[in-house]
Length: 111
Image (cartoon, rainbow, N blue to C red; front, side, top):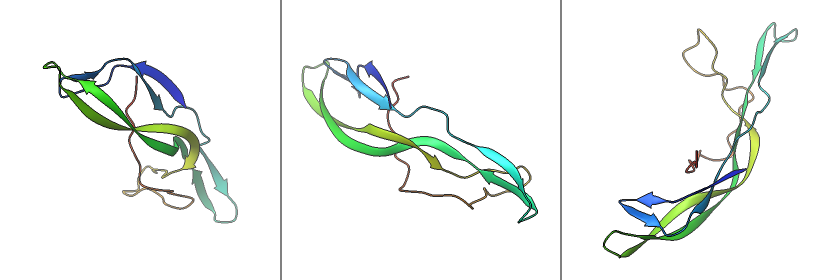
């Protein structure tokens, strides 16, 4: 998990202090090999994704001095997860060896 400190802004309102925002970064194993068993190329793809998240709330101060609540997803842990391997010449991604633990949740990136 990578962390970067930033002021959150939403609809012109801002956090009073910088907030530690998290993101998943890193390199995961992706490879292709020829299988003698299937007589074809086999693909294995994975990407660095969130595996544990929490919902966090912060108060944002607006220009008119009102305060509004803001909720965001904070990444607690990341891991290399198998994903689709697109293959040239095929309209759809190959789905063998694919695992989806849950729908993708986008996190705010501090970069």
